[in-house]
Length: 405
Image (cartoon, rainbow, N blue to C red; front, side, top):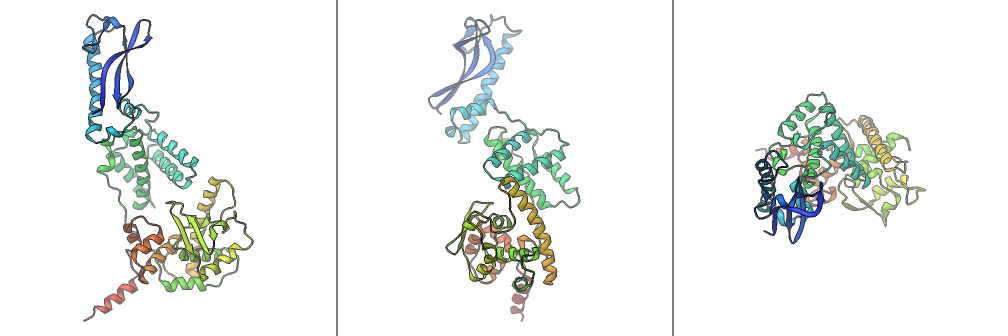
């Protein structure tokens, strides 16, 4: 192990007249740094061979207690180094990172302060959606704690269980909504570990498991998608737009509403739609079919390359753009209820239904699961399987009939 730490006197600069600071001299891969103990003595009272203050020193009530405190600091530092070595982390730390782990020197002891700092960093990086999730969590936690500051060490298993009971005790709150908050909390906590704000040994999610409840079937039958397609609506009216949004999303591999809202004319290149998904930054390159072309033509007329395709965003400010998308999505979902009534569709119609319907219909047309996963932009097949876990009952009925004796 190429790391060492010892007690010594820092004779480079005098403190308090003729005294020098007692330090922990840290060596790591041929580099050295010092960690102050907060105590100082003159050279005549320091025993460099025994690495302790001489008994004749009169500057404290008890030299033995002082030496004991110094020995404990050294022991704690060595314990941290040994644990890092055993965990295989030591060799991958710079000397500054190692020093920070020993002294735990950081601006943030508050979970709220650190979370807010991360939120600001995300906004600076134009990751507005994730930043909003961080802000929403912190506001929710502040309500839970009555605005009392929350320290990292307080975020433990018991705290998570209490927050769970608090959230679920309010009418209208769901287990899946709680899971969304807790995933964000976990992300902040994990970043806190990397920033040396909290020790990973007390990780609350070792024992606490984030639970979700199965969602109701979101896919609608293909005959209902055709009903929506054939619906006669006044051109340019909002029901007209909402119908088109649903169909365009379906034909663009179940594109999310936020990705549609941010599409610009320049994303249409050589008969293809090319863009990066907001949620995952995954690049898409989708062919414009004749059916899709017919729907898009209404929105592309007279648009410059820098103009948004759909009438959702009209601001140049990114924060305002995200607010406009959130508001438009709420109105869109309300509008889809009206579309469902006009088409005699009993299923609950939302912006997510087009995505789930696309995935289910692709599976029923024998599109391979890996291809569906790629179309949806999922990194794992298990995520795709969540979309496909509920096949339409009429399909299951047909399978059942085939099993009749």
